[in-house]
Image 1 (cartoon, rainbow, N blue to C red):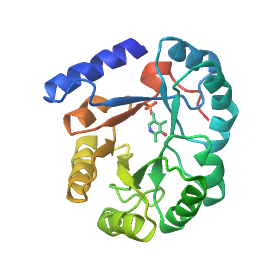
Image 2 (image 1 turned 90 degrees about the horizontal axis):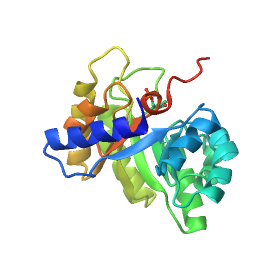
Image 3 (image 1 turned 180 degrees about the horizontal axis):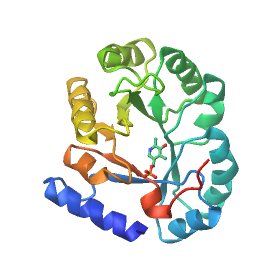
Length: 218
Ligand SMILES: *Cc1c(COP(=O)(O)O)cnc(C)c1O
């Protein structure tokens, strides 16, 4: 696999789903990858990346941003409220807004900065106890709290489906929840299932190993 292969598969999936060319954004998930692999993808002109740890992103992206124009990095992993300020300096988007305490922290920090990253609410569609995300039954109320209490412009929803279930059911559920809340963006689909996610309306797919190769485990 390579960046070009994945871009081609995304383009085909857009056509198959009757969607506009370019309507799906490819987030190249560079977590844990060696810098040389990330640099190779930057050299090919790609500019949108995903990281799941604030600390790791802080060690990697400021230097790349100095060398490459137009880089955007999205946080796709958990955000502790004590790292909100640091995160706002590192990421153009946060996909993991999942609790009121974090919304409150973000609201204060966003006001102080006068700029807000793009925000996705993570939904735990599989209701897995160990997984982050708002429960499906609480999504509508949480969207409302973010908007009305904290004045946060929520842009979309994000999901990581349970590993042992058909992801399409979760993608369809996420889409329904987004539609009824007037949210335009859907962050869903990874290396193994991004085409299915695009068929069900994904606007942002998060693809790591299929672009960069397997990550070091552990
Ligand atoms: C690591 C990660 C991905 C990418 O997974 P791949 O299977 O390597 O494509 C996508 N989303 C999140 C939230 C991740 O942590």
